Image 1 (cartoon, rainbow, N blue to C red):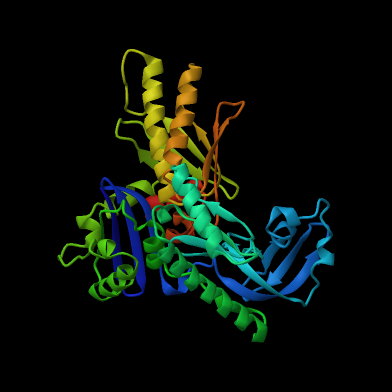
Image 2 (image 1 turned 45 degrees about the horizontal axis):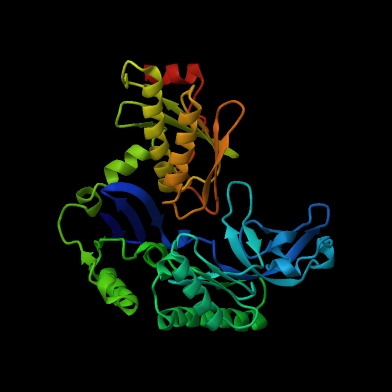
Length: 419
């Protein structure tokens, strides 16, 4: 059973995805924290750095956004020059430029921006200048893929690009055309505003967290959506009914006194998953440590003694850890490079099986995630697309005492005990 559970309180919206009552994804949003990824700005070029083939653009945020030359050149391969020109030949300081955020500001870095625009809809991702058609690889039927590609070619105008999303499988031409019409209208509004606006200015923002999750994850495989706000629940039902009457009937208003995240096992699982040390059901455990550059995960047998065969015990622990690691990467929205120190295995087959298990679990992740392979030191290297703050960063602040190290000088710790 798959469920989407929504908790609304004052200005806070929290959305949890459960699979067989196991928490797999969690999102939280306040109005002041609306995500920037997907937003379109008219910006002003501040600095052009030919040595880096990059530029900094003022889009109205605290830090200037970063634009690399690959995000400035044409999106379609047949128009990319074999030898890249200097970025100074393409843009100049003071120039107005229409851009879209593809990565949130993180730490000391500003937002990453592009001129390769894309607007996601329910069934289609609309790319006004991409000039190609793509179909989600998760649609396995070649016959259906071919049909959807033909439909997309029929709908798109010259120069436009369309990607048919997984949820569009078996959808009608009318539904896809309606979805495309909404996104075309949004893009035309952006262009009109850009012509008359002074930079920097926000021209388009992605919908809020609830609308995004409904758009991207509320499909035929979700059994129910539970929301504890009657007003927002009724409004959501009306919007979903325009897409699907059947899905609208799966929306339920939660009315019990017990908090919805307690009635559905969200709060307890979230608290457990956000700890540095995460226990496995078998008695083994994981230790997660994050740096600015990467995340390191250590796998331990812990209390699990297993069988008389040490190799079997190790493999069982590693297999359980692999599934849990894939879940935690989704749940905590950890991106970038991830190194996993699995317990040493002597069997090449077991190592291959763990890699295959990771790949299988990563297919459930809506964010691109890859098991790159085993390093020479026996570590598993994983990459996961990093576009926004992780759940760790959005839910926790750096400790004012230890500065984020988790440690304080022994003298200070002793003074605290005496008090």
